[in-house]
Structure formats: C-alpha cells, structure tokens
Image 1: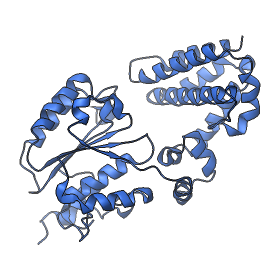
Image 2 (image 1 turned 180 degrees about the vertical axis):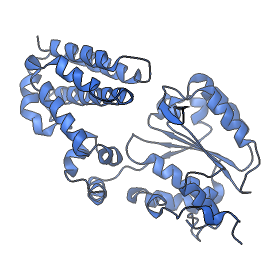
Image 3 (image 1 turned 135 degrees about the vertical axis):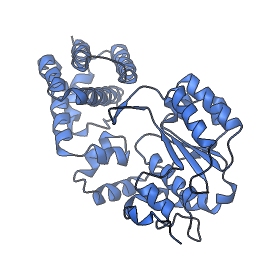
Image 4 (image 1 turned 30 degrees about the horizontal axis):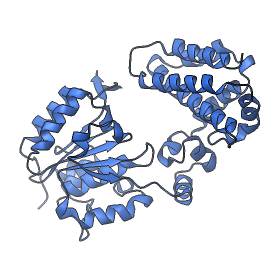
Length: 347
C-alpha cells in the first residue's frame, strides 16, 4: 500500500537512475554480491569519469524498497522517488560546501562538524525502515579532524548504515580510512564509449572536448558549451604569443564576471595554464600535445627557447595555486600575477 504522501512526489527521472554505459558491468557484478557489501566502500578514480553517478546508483540500490530480481533499484517505490527528488531522509551527502542564505558556497575542506553531524544522523532510526546511506565526495577534502572523526565511525559503524566515499585522489586519504573500506576502482570509458556518450549528450566537437579533459567524458560534457570554448580559445591564443600577451586584458576578463563567478573564472584560467604548460613539456620532450592539438605549431615554437626547470617550477606554482582557490583572494590579481610569471618564461 503506498504511503499517504506518495502522490506528492515528482515523477521518477529515469535518465539519472542508471549507471553510465562503461559502468554497467561493474554495477551488475556489485549487485550480484549485494548481500556481502561492507559498510564502507571507497570509489576511486580520476575526476570526470562518473564516480558520483556510480555511487548514487549504489545508494539507490541500498535505499530501494522493491528492487528488481537482479538487485537494481526499481525507480517506482517511495524511496526511489524521494531520492530522485533529492529529498530522501535516509540519504546524506557530505561535500565541501557551506550554505549561506540558502546558497551553497564552495569551501576548501569538509570540516569535522559536518562529519559529526553525519554521525549523529547515522545513529538515528531510519525514516523508511531500511538502510541509511552517507555519500562523501570528494573524500580527500576532509581535513585531518574530519577524517579522524570518520575513522571512529567506520571502526564501529551503526547498523544498516553504509558509507560511500568518492575520491579523485584516494592517495591523499589516511591509510587507516582506506583500510576500512572496500576499494572499488571506477571504470574508465574506452575512447569509442566516451565519444558515443558525448555525442548522445549533444556535444558537437567530441574529440576536442575529450582532448581538453584527458578523456574524462563528464567533465568534457560540462565544458563543451560555446561560451566556455570561446573564452578558452581567446586565452590559448594569448598564451601562444607570450610577448604580445596583454595581462590587463586577460585580467579584465576575470573582473567582467559577477563577483560570485570570478573565482570560477580564475579556476578555469588556472586549468588552461596547467594544460598549456603540460603540452609545452610534452612537446619539449619530443612528444605531441594532448589538450591543445590545434596549436601544436605554436607550442613547438615556444618549447625550444623555454627552460625546462623554469617551466616545471611554474607548473608546480600553478598546481599550488589551484589548491588555494577556496581561500579568500582577489581572483584578478592572482590571474595577473600568474600571467606575468608565464610571460617571464620567454624573456
């Protein structure tokens, strides 16, 4: 008999309920072993290949009240519909976000208070009378105190509560946490699988989008819009001519965005600089560019005069600056300082 408030739930969103095509074999294997699932699983792999999609599928399977014979979520029960609406009381998602005036703001770390609140929630009785699921992503962004608090919970997990940790860089997690999880290596799509999937999402220049993201299809799909690609092209052309590069013009592009979007633009600019420097290093070592194939000629011309040690030091600075994006900063000033240092690489 349906619950009294079932009719108030929105229709199921079928497209979001299934694993991605390259995850189906792994998902079927995991569902076949559903009775032996541990209380903690670590889904690991590079960013942009769909680890979060896989984790949410497993969460739905745990929460579903009428699974199919092979263990997949039915998509029709109250739990499935609550989850599809983002309102399931027995699913807790922990991310590096703070809520200010009902608006999520990205922060650098998942702090201990978030993990403690999750633990208190896990110890409560399930609303739906079944399993409870906590999804932590990205798990490596827990600060040391938060990681220690989670470790204590994993040592004595509450009954019928499952912890799904999603990590892009699981080597940064404490070994004590990794040892208490079953590690699942998220499958990466083959190039044909990635191309077919992106084409189905309406991405036009599939190969270019994949090259820019290191064959991470979800990231490629997110960055394929014309506005982003236009801005990226302008930056790449400027980087291809460092002696004519206008630091103030590119810095003004940062400030042209609304205040809340300037940090996001800085993040994009740093990613473009990192990819450009990686391609410079590849070409200088006798290889071919990976992200900027269309500018191979410019890269080869620049790779000859640039000093390898200076380039590697600059690349390391870019990586460090990317880790500081959540700190209070002036995005335009950071971008301009990085561009001045880039121009200095070429005398």
